[in-house]
Image 1 (cartoon, rainbow over the protein chains, first blue to last red):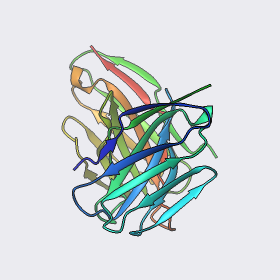
Image 2: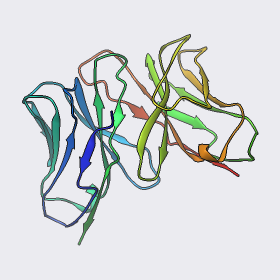
Image 3: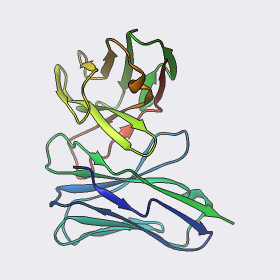
Length: 111
Length: 114
């Protein structure tokens, strides 16, 4: 079952913050976050495995709620390089790392 | 290391023609995947493989076949192309070892079926 991502699109000025959400109707094994720039391949950002987990690097972080049904990606003090489409990929069980991706959130950062 | 490579980058087919997309990885990964990406629909898993000689169906397998004769290669075949198969196809690979089993994606193949 495909996870639901929100919002579908967001426009930010450089330096502003954004939150992207990814929700599932059932508990998940893990959530992966990827960013894809136009015309390029998706690039891995991070994976969350444990309920209540929070992790991040630089100014991009993510959380996974206790019930393991929702994850949020936080982009702080956005930079022009953050522009792209963000996808969450969810894993129902730990078999073969099969991911079901959301439809994506298009993020545009402007000056 | 080249990572994940895909051949060809672009292809135009006529309805009913066949073709094979080649994916190669040099990271010694066990798992490999084929996705298609259509506007507004994200990435959808077509087939995947957990090791040499094994393949399994994903979300949207109809009209496609795959083979993994060598660990480093994963082939996607279209026996009789249809306009609905116009899409961008991505191959990815990952390793089951380690905590973060991220998927590494190839650059994609843009296929148009007329």
